[in-house]
View 1: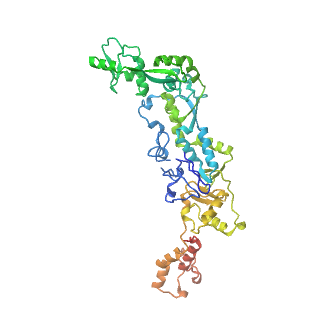
View 2: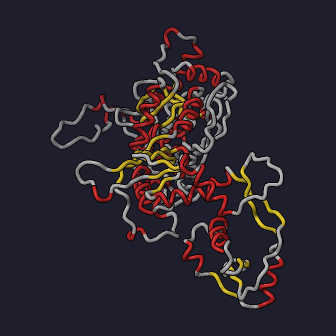
Length: 507
C-alpha cells in the first residue's frame, strides 16, 4: 500500500482501496487533495470490490460471480479433491484484522480528512489474505462432534498448521531446514560398482539414479519437494521409469562428479566434510525440530497461510468461513468498529439512521453562517443546496476550493472517498439519489421561450377576453372556481422554476 499526501494534507492514497461508486465515476479530480479513484463500485448499490475481481482471496481485477462479483473461496482451485468428498473440520473460525495491517491503516486514516465507509474498509482487509487473522478453535457446546475434535499442530516459525504431527514435521523439514543448514555443491568421486538400471523421471526426463543406492529415496523426496510439491510420493513414483540401457547408465555415472552437502550455518570449521540430506535432517530433528512444533488448543494464523494448508478438512472449514464473510462482513466490521472506537475515530450514518456507516478522523459539527465571513457562508450555502457535489461543480472563482477545504478540515463539511462533498449534519447526504441537480438560473427562461406552455399556445391561437376566460378543470361535484382567480399557467410555471434554480457558476 502506497502512502501519498495531498497538497493540503488531505487523503492518503490507500493503494488498492477503491471506493468510487458507478454514479460518481464520471467526476474526475474531485477531492480536496487526492482521492484514490479506481474501477470499483459502491457496495450498497451492489455494483461490480471489486467487485470486479481478485487474486486468490484478494485482488479486484477480473473476478466474476458470487456476491459483489466475487468468486467464493471454494471455487478457486480446482486441483483438489471434489468438495463433496471432504468434510470440513468441526471448528469455529473467527475472522479479524491482522494487527500490523490494522495499525498501518489507522495511521493513514489519522492523517486523512475523508470519511470512509466501514464496509469498504472491511472488504479492503478481506481482499488481502495476509491482512486477515483467523482464530480457529474446536467447536464446543450443543451440536459439536466430540469424536472429531482436532488435535492441532502448528509450526512456530511461520504459522503453518495441521491436525497431525507428521504433516507439520514434513513442512518444517521442507520449509525451514534451509534456515539452519546451507547446501553446497562439492566435488566427489563418481559412483563405482555395477548397476543394472537407472531410474528416470517421466515428467522432467532427469536421471535419478539406480533404485538400489542408499540415497535414492532422498533424491525422490527432493524432486517432490522442489519440482512437484503438489504430488504425493506415491503419485510421483508412478511416473518413474527404469532404463536399462548401458549408455544411459554410464551418462548418469559421469554426471555424478558433484554432490550436494549440507553445512550448519555459522559453522566456519575448516575441512568439514558436510552432511548428506538424510544426515542433515536427522541432526535437525534431534536438535531443532522440537522448538519449532507447537500443540496449541486453538490456531492463530493469517488467511494466506490457512488457504495454503494441505489438510483438506481444515482448508474447507476456513474457506466456508471466508465465503460467508465475503457475502456479509459482519465479523470484520464488528472488529474494526471496536478498534476504531478505541482510537477515538468518529462514526456516523449517511442519509438516515439505517444508512451506510462511515468512519472518519474528523469531528463533524454544523456550520454557523451568521458568524462567518461572507465567502465561507456562501460556500456553506452552496454545499447545502448541492449535496453530494464534486469538485467539477464548484464555482470557478479561484478561492472557492480553498474555502471548501477549510470547511472540510474544520468538520463543517464531509468529504467522502468517492470525491463528493456534503453538508455536515446528523445524517450527511450520500448516494446517487442526491446527484439530481437543479437547472441553471437562466435555463428555465430559455426553455420557456423555446417551448411555450400548452396554455399559452392555446391562448395565442384562440384569444379569449379575460372576463370570459374559462375556469380550471375541476371535478364535477365541485363548484367551478371564479374566473378572476384562475392561475396564469405560463407566468406561475416560470416563476416556480426561477425559485428552484441553482446559482449561476462563475466562469
